[in-house]
Image (cartoon, rainbow, N blue to C red; front, side, top):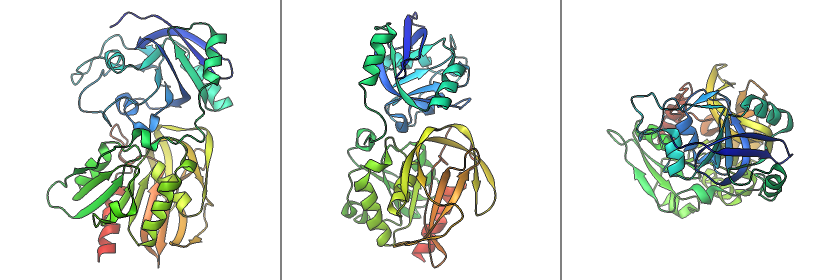
Length: 375
């Protein structure tokens, strides 16, 4: 491991923590958020939805499984920084090719260890997510907090074009092709088209700037909008695109950011949560079946929609389909015409590679919806 150096973490309200650096040396800034995941940090760090966020791990011991070449959810680490209490001095997994520290150093990601992450998390729960800076260069809290307060806030951030692909690509169906799906990349994770392909879907992944003609020119059986970072209130172009597609009766499935855009397209507002949902142990109830699922989350915004009501929209009848049992935040929406499902979205991650896999059935629901629409 690279020898550690002193590091300083400062929140925008002035609270600060002194620890040791790991990964790259330097300074980094972003929105401070905490993840309650006990495992799967590689998938977390490479999730594009964490763009411009400094992630605090609530699990006390991080780095045990090192880093491998199979579990990345994208082509790079997207977090702005990483905060842990106790960093493993060496990986102990047979799958590891290198350590977490080595990978972060290679990719230029600044981390801090050896601080009281429990106290930091409790502070964020009480005060809300806020801007943060980590530095191995400027160890003066008064100086660093000024830099933190000069950085942009997450509300109003339009980030989809920063993380989405610029050129289309195709993931072929495994086995016999059953459906053609167009996926709008707003920060898509690699496991999403993989799980679709296993269900016979040929997935055409398009940039976030794709047009109606780009999509309909592929004659899709269904359209998917992915997860992604930033404020959904900025995604006017994608929202208007989805309204056009819904008006043309294209079956729709959305995840996370795609759920928030779906909500806006149906006429609902979005809002910023106090500190968000992040982790792989969030309980969500399917209001249709009554089943409770343990799910993976990464969202700081949510849809403001009435629970227990059917709402008429220009595209059909909408309703809330899932809620979080911790705080009753809307976690899913569905759209029906003549009592037939024509679109749905969830605020969590059914593709969660690190688990849990309770919500994997939603990909089968997407396939069934396309089958019905085709018939």
